[in-house]
Image (tube, rainbow, N blue to C red; front, side):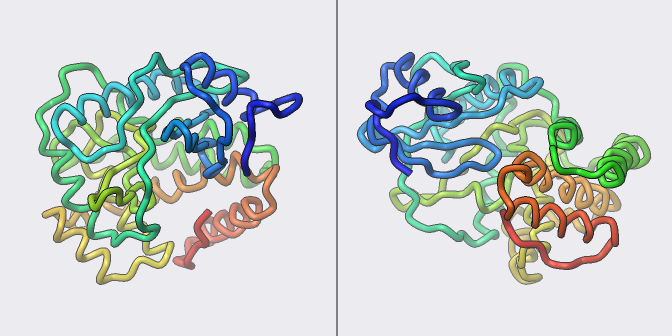
Length: 297
C-alpha cells in the first residue's frame, strides 16, 4: 500500500502518520505500509525512515519513552540495535503514539534462531543502564488484549483471565530465577532480527524493561509451536551459553509466553478473518493442553 500527501480525507493510522510526520519535519509522500500487527509500521523511502504507530494503551507512552532511551544508550555502546531518529518523540496524533526510526534494509527474512543467542548474551552482559527502566509486566499486555478483544465468548474470556491469574499468583510470583535481573528486550525472537549491511540488528524494543533474563530466552524455545526444530533450539541454548530448560521454572515461563503470543490476534481478530481463525485454533490448543503446531500471524 502506498499513500501520498495529496490523498483526500485521511482517517485512522494514515491520518496519524501524516500529522506526526509533519510535526517531525518529515515528508510522508510515498509512504508504504510494511505491516499492521502489534503496531502499524510505515516506510518513508524518500526519508529512509520507519514510522511505527502504536495504540495508546495504559502505560504504552512510558514504554515507548523507555525504548527510545534504551536504544540511544545501546547505540553509544555499539550494540547492534535499530536506532531512533533524533527528533522529538513519541508523538501523539489521531489516537496513535508515533515513533520514528532509521530504516535498515533487511537482506533476509528467516534468520537462524541460534543467531539470537550471542546477541542476547551481549545485551545481558552490558553494564547496568544509568536510568530507571519499566519493570517487566508479563500479564498486563495479555489482560489488556483480552479486555479489548471484540470476538471472545464469555467462556474463553473467563478461561484466559483465570489462566493469567493462576500463572501469576500460583507460579510466577514464587519462582526463584537463576540468571541475574536486569535489562531485557522483552520480546526476543527471530522475527525481531534483521540483517542490514551484512550484520544482524535486534529491533522492536517496545517491551524493553528490567526483569529476569530468562524471559528473553523462552520465546525461541517456545518456538517449537512454530516449527523450530530440536536442533535449532539446542543450538540457541549453546550460543547463549545457558539452557533455561534445565531450570524448574521453565515450564511456567513457556506457558506465559504462549499466552503472550495471543495479544496481537486478540486485538486483530475482529477485523482480520485470518487472525480470528488463528485465535480460535490457539485457544482450542491451549484449553486442550496439547502440543499442536501453530500458524504464525
